[in-house]
Amino acid sequence: MFEATDQTRRKQRQESAIKYLLTTMTVIIVLPLLLIIFYLFYKAAPILSLEFLLENPIHGMRSGGIWAPLLGTIYLVLISLLIATPVGIFAAIYLNEYSRESWMTRVINLAVVNLAGVPSIVHALFGLGAFVLFAGIGRSILAASLTLAIMTLPVIIASTKEALAAVPHSFREACWNVGATRWQTIRNVVLPNSISGILTGVILQVSRAAGETAPVMFTGAVFFKAIQTGDPFAYGLLDQCMALSMHLFTISTQVPDVPDALTYGTAVVLLGVVLLFNALAILLRIKLRGKKKW
Amino acid sequence: MVEQTPKIGVRELRLSYGQHEVLHGISFEILRNEIFGIIGPAQSGKTSLLRAINRTLEFTAGARYSGSITVDGEEVGKVRNVYELRRKIGMVAPLPVGLPLTIYDNVAFAPRMGGIRQKGSIDDIVERCLRQAALWDEVKDRLHTLGTRLSGGQQQRLTIARALSHQPEILCLDEFSIAIDPVTTMRIEEVLKELRQQMTIILVTNLVQQARRLADRTMFLFEGDIIELDRSEVIFSNSPAQQKTYDYVNGIFG
Ligand SMILES: Nc1ncnc2c1ncn2[C@@H]1O[C@H](COP(=O)(O)OP(=O)(O)OP(=O)(O)O)[C@@H](O)[C@H]1O
Ligand SMILES: [Mg+2]
Image 1 (spheres, rainbow over the protein chains, first blue to last red):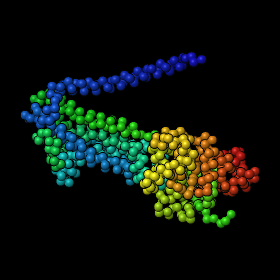
Image 2: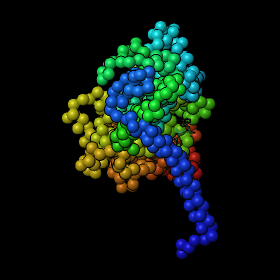
Image 3: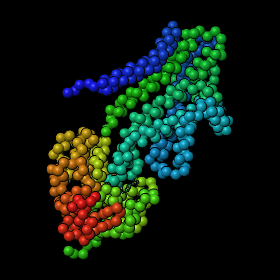
Image 4: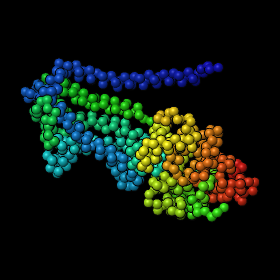
């Protein structure tokens, strides 16, 4: 009754061939990644310790730890997100939920999409011109954070809009039908059901903000600055700071005779910061998706 | 019958989406506490009409209407508090939309948005509406599970409960029985007969028999024009005024 004809056998062969192909591709992608991480850890192993994290670089950055750049990066990332997240989310809510189709909104949407693709060096120059010079903030953590915020904003807007648009329109109509205002609808139904997607989009921008060198180099990061060790409030908003990404660039290209382990150790910490935030994103997503309700 | 002010008055209503005109200047009145049936093939503009009445049409970009729609003598286009207007009208869409909330919260949503805070009164509203929608017995032990986990028919009754939760004076049912089995449909029809004591009911239906059973008067809408509007006995008799009505009711076309 259910006997395989030639045609079905051919289909089955095709099916398993494709499966092998896809598996191979995945391995090809994942393997180098694992190798890189393994290699980094292997090279950095001699130096990785708590002291490495908690001490300033010393001896012309040829030894010591990475406390100053680590704290600087955390400052830059957190402050830029503190600025970009509310602005981005509210802008996306406006664009997706309130704005009417008009040439204005079309231009704005187009701008958002295109700004997301602007190279970071351009944002860096903009930040230098707008915040450091024109606004007169000077090279500082604030100016650098603002620059990073401008850089991440379009992507946050785009990903938030996507998350909002994924909530079925019929939910909104059901709310409007019973006399709920737009904001009540957004607050009670749309946001609770898109928040996991929104936050994922936001947190993934952390990796970008943490990894970029050019925008902070132009606007507030310095080659070297020793700060009080162990004090998480060692930087002020208008201070200049060190940053991991730039520190890595410095010790691997600008300073001669830096021990390998130090360079690789810095890379591992940078990777660790990014992965930590991404892990946070995944956890948050899992936690919030448990609440997804349709 | 004593003289009545119409609950809803529609004058020369033209409705269009962009260039596409859907209603071509229709006029009719819906009386207080009647069940008003609207029948007509797909695309004839029934849903659009309901959305114009509760002003949710304005959420659709490019949708416009001219002419006049009054509810209790008040022009809906000029209503200041549109949310109050929408609360006056309970709306049940063809496909059930359980909000992604618990069963309880689904029904409590409208009263809460309307500003009712006391837990006791919300409890009462939830129970009353679920009973009216013939759903209470099935869900009373799991009010705090997700509404979206109910079966299609149960979800539809949940939307009916939600439409009743803001104590509307007008209840619009847009092909509400698409997703419900015949037995439950019958139970809801019984409920509707009771509800008409308290409210005006607009019943849009593709089931000609349902309009015949329930509606006091029935309007036959066809491609944006009223073909015939009369007491249901006439519409569903062997001799309605229009041949087209007879043909549609008897399934000869449409
Ligand atoms: N949001 C919209 N945008 C553009 N055109 C629309 C929209 N909604 C409805 N229409 C058009 O309006 C016409 C009438 O649609 P409507 O939904 O009012 O008909 P209906 O009588 O309710 O049909 P059905 O019995 O299938 O529900 C259709 O031609 C439809 O294409
Ligand atoms: Mg319809």
